[in-house]
Image 1: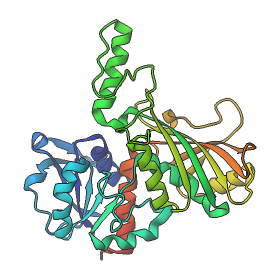
Image 2 (image 1 turned 60 degrees about the vertical axis):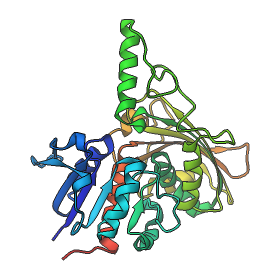
Image 3 (image 1 turned 135 degrees about the vertical axis):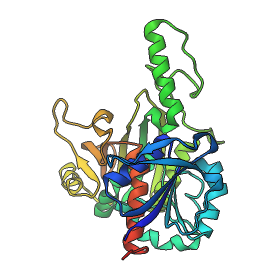
Image 4 (image 1 turned 120 degrees about the horizontal axis):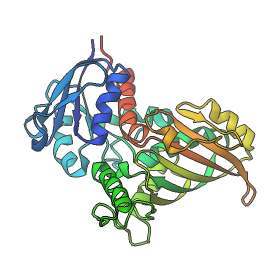
Length: 341
């Protein structure tokens, strides 16, 4: 006996990935409903490699009564309208937007890191999925935190354009083509040219000079990993289609050698350690794209601070950073609370 599952935002990058991952992981489903806005109604989407297709329905007219789990990838504005009504109808919402992440009554979950926090979902019948950069960060750091307690994190991200949706991917493609053929480079989605460039600006600026993306990484990491840890982030958009990268520096309460950290990470859930100190002995976004793992490389001691370590972390932002994590939350929810059969 399986679940009745909704994917809301099924025509977007993350929504399509959710559909594929549900099929790839053989999530136990008796039925699936694919929802989107009115402009996408009637579009057919393949259900992974099953050979089956499903037609997109209008979320405005969909009745969630009798459905078990809804994976939302529709942005904060639409989520504010539809998540409460789905939750009230008894359909547990797993939301990929930022709307509920810092709500004290909504658990913010990365299953490899804080699975037990999901037990608080009944307060609103909503579970939040973290920011894509936060998800891979905490997966990489949780085992090190358990071993030696992290006091401070300094992270610089190198975030792919798919984090800005299809429009971001299209802009990188069109600007790259324009450069090669001598056409005008149009800047619409991003604040500056993204092709052959990097932009140290993601989301809106705050009064202290940080951006909202950087703020998200700080507060979400503290909520998921440990409220006592200090976090400083610099978030940068780079001309990569899929895959976020992070250069991470941590200060620990207790000494942990690079070798010990490598051994810990080698056995950590969700982590793939690729760390040969030779040409090509590290992971890049090209290798991470399409993979479920959070890749860690370049683990080394930082002699400039007491008990310091540095590492490089790469992950597919559409998968572990969004769709995969949402499906893993659904699996966790099923194991702990919505058992069928």
